[in-house]
Length: 158
Length: 352
Image (cartoon, rainbow over the protein chains, first blue to last red):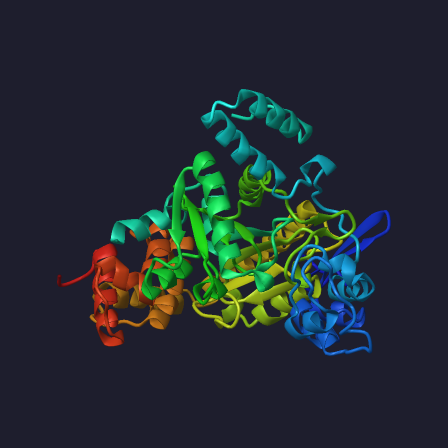
């Protein structure tokens, strides 16, 4: 494959840019990639960017607390890991910028869960309860649990 | 024990319909993993020992009723067995070092593993010989759905799947391909090709991941970004990149084999001869010798060795695997002896 730009040298750089409404794909040789400024700066990896950003402290880090797990923003900056699923919203203004710098995006566009699937460990608990109810031959109780399970879109409960 | 390791890697040593046979020499394997957490359960860093144990019990009970496979409790196996699972690509290096309760479920097919209590509650991983992202992705999502039917995932409309580390936010998806590129290494083109990969958001590592160094002309390319990208787009980008690299690799080989045919045939057959005759051989030497033989098989120069055999040797000759294969704890020197013995046996070697 020849370079899309000079049409002379073999293309060794595959370049893809996603722009609103279209995707540009280019196959370039090294010298044309240089000319376009694509090969200049050494890119930092997401982990390197994260480590750099975690070092930036601010005044309210100790007072910003996640109600889900009691992690403070200061603690997050020390360990670089979230304590629970609520941390992201608890530290949102900080995290939004962090994600933008790491991923060049702050919006998920991939696979989604429908609201019905956001059930935590409820379904599991209900299934366990149902098992117990059936073992104890508490059929009225079992019917109630089945109804609850159906609300999660689960019909075949056995 | 030797049977169990061979069982673990049969996805890698048996024929697959995934790729054309000539590309299988260059595309060694491909891998997909997704990171998931359970919504109501504290994340790894805030988990108490008891939480970790309970999560294992929950996930294990779901998996054992829906999937054929076996569960391995990391606290019940020896350091050597842990190392072996890593050498078979079934668990991550971080997982070996875990002190809290952790476990891995491995399917009977050997190519799907589910790590429980890694950095995230769940790391669901699929492996394939050659390039087979579409099928692995659907197998991985199948497991995700099986667990998700009983346990709800931590998910946010804006930020996608919530993971322990922000670098995995969004899809939680890591896609990687292991490529054998002796042609590009020899023609000195490999660096600029890989620089190109980095420019489009990929990262390049050696065969055993982070910090393992490049050995045996094997390069692992994977995506870095998980937010603002669709799963299919990540797969498409890495697939196109792979095909482009294969194209350049093949051209480099054509040049080498036209200009220096005798020299290369000599190197290939000498490498094969060493593997068939050596009485002691270390891991790194095996990787380099296997690379030459692999190239020979790809170019049709070596006809009496299959890629399946080369793949098996690649994994079984690793330090922990070779000990488990022979069922004994061996010092480094003795490993080199046993490794040479195993390889001679597999390649129909001399003087035994």
